[in-house]
Amino acid sequence: MAGLVAKTKALITTAKAQARPMFDEFMRYAKVELAPPTPADFKELRGAAEKAKKAKGGLGKKTVSEVWLGALVSFEVISWFFMGEVIGRRHFVGYKV
Image (tube, rainbow, N blue to C red; front, side, top):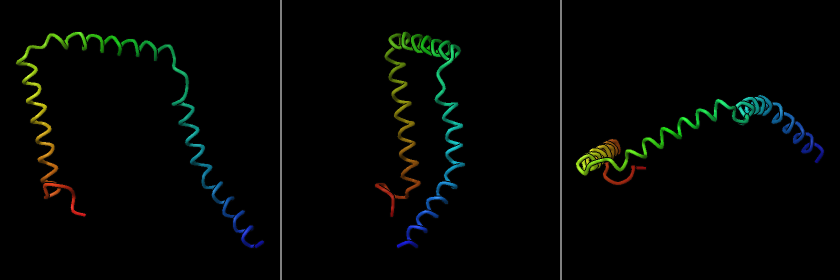
């Protein structure tokens, strides 16, 4: 039993030593990514919101022919994607496992 406890302590010590560099890297990225936003970030966000409002405003100004053309192009792109999948799988349904 004492041998099991000693092996467990050694295993835990080794795991802690190996996990330390990964934890340090995690903390380095966490400090950068979890920092509070700066005033420049708010200005950038306002600019993105303005662009979204402008894009949304022009949505109702599309003609029926432009909408149909967009739908047909989207359908063609999706169709070619699925045809590529079928060719890649060499089977109509599912992958051969």
